[in-house]
Length: 482
Image (cartoon, rainbow, N blue to C red; front, side):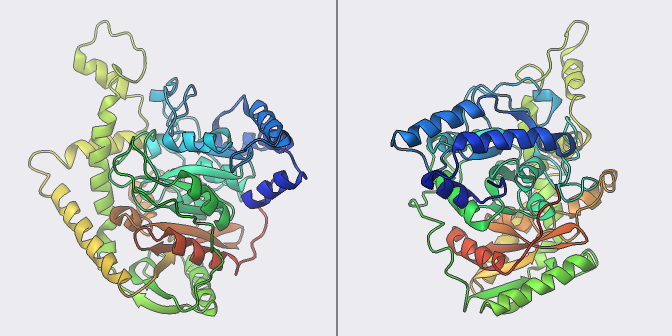
């Protein structure tokens, strides 16, 4: 029994009796204990996981109705609430915060008999691209632990790539599912905005963030999306997807489909030569699959990183205002402090990246500067939406490298915020426009993974997953060197 089996293989194994939930979860826990000292994918683990797996096995043996996941170990990013458990957001500010309710996605997983194996590491409050900004220490890339795993959902990607869970849920505000998926050689999907409920996700930038599934196979991600998508009365931004089955017909292929290469994401001085070479190979693979390729220009892409950080820091500044040490935060001795200095002292417990974005988030919408920054960013966002609508009027899919650079070493970019932010240049467009995008692992060059990103039009996840599945089946990737 290999821990590297797919979600579909796991379910089939349970159904035909070749494995049990208890033995698989036990083996997973044993493996986690072995690799966690070097990978640090998790902030906390579920102490009741084995007991839950046994209960599911009993239901299977008794012939009772069992949920779709049959005790499958799934990890959850630690900015998604689980009732009675810690939700830290990888921040000292929430180190001892216990969630009073389940996020909607967690309720849906529990209803389908998943075993949530643990809460995964992230950049503090999901702000970062490398998981270096976790208050509890960074997660390490399973392909080479000297390299970052991407972020902010780095722990989720590491848990899947490192065989510590079969599936995971992350959150994606500007590429935080797709970036680590690319760096760790797994599949990561950012769904259409509103397709998956954000109820129970600790807010960073509400208007563009989205919970997304992560797995080692495209079909596994489709399976997970089946059970987390849809309308939620707790989240008025959610969309009724009519119970669409994203797994059905996933092998339909893409013959005759039109694919646009996004010029601004696949050329230029910021594109690593190795990544460019891998992307070129992926274009050939799409052509062999019967797709028609053409180049598409989205000239607003040049301004997307600046736009993204203006808009998200403005929202983050508002969202983080609640961490004032009165509602959330440390239990400080208030004696001797005035009100403002008390809050200021509490907020010194934020890490450097959160602090940077809070300061920027207070500046860009302020009187005298809102017109210069915030309103211009909103105009760029509007123009970008029009450009991507025009592109999808003539193309079925848009493609690019997921990240323009290879995974980098720890400390290499941490003192250069701009270089860090530019790693988002290929991923933020999907968030600013609301369209779905997926990262598919394509090659491993000199021990470092490279992913290919595919965009589809709004609510076209079914077709997007078909394209990703077709590309996946042209690859033959090595096993992670654990």
